[in-house]
Image: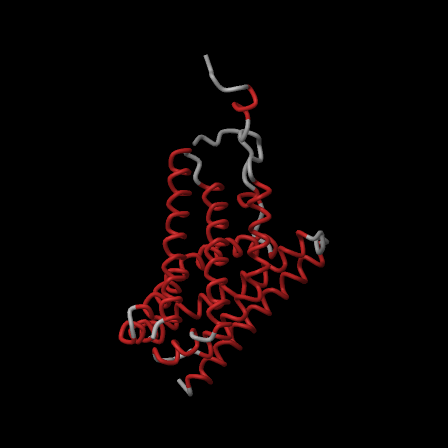
Length: 130
Length: 126
């Protein structure tokens, strides 16, 4: 497609800022979580094949590679959840003022990271040490 | 000679088509997913390192299997709605767009049905 004199998209003109970075991150985490449904499906369907298949699925998830993936998905999940609530607040007409946009953006970042680490701390507590 | 009425020809060709229904469904599934997701994370944490017997006991509890099925259906519906928006934003060829939208829908239904039946099978199994 020829661009010629056509107007440029905003992301080509402005330097990245909190609001725009959080916005594209919402879409990217959504995409990552969509891919994550494959592991979710693998885990649940393995159980239907019996104890051995379920044990294999659990071992895959518990492996270093599996845990690395799952950690990323946990962060993506909490980010998408928190920022999703931020979106719902906007839908209700709340929070469009610039200072509030920035404040809620930072809240989303801090809360999603905190919830991710809390979940993993709880997971390791259940597992009983690394 | 066109056998369709003028109304029949234009119906569904408006600028928004079924945008409001899509937008609303995305919000309703999002709201439902907030408690369902938090419940699921707590459940998964409790099942870290669990063997089959522990999983079967967990999914055998009525409240758990109900919430798990609701989570699966809502999650895949929300996933489909979100992926649809991304495809509509970036895929501009009409044939490629329709094909990828259909592929997403079929995949999501296949995965969702597989999950629901797998969960019910273990839950009801002896």
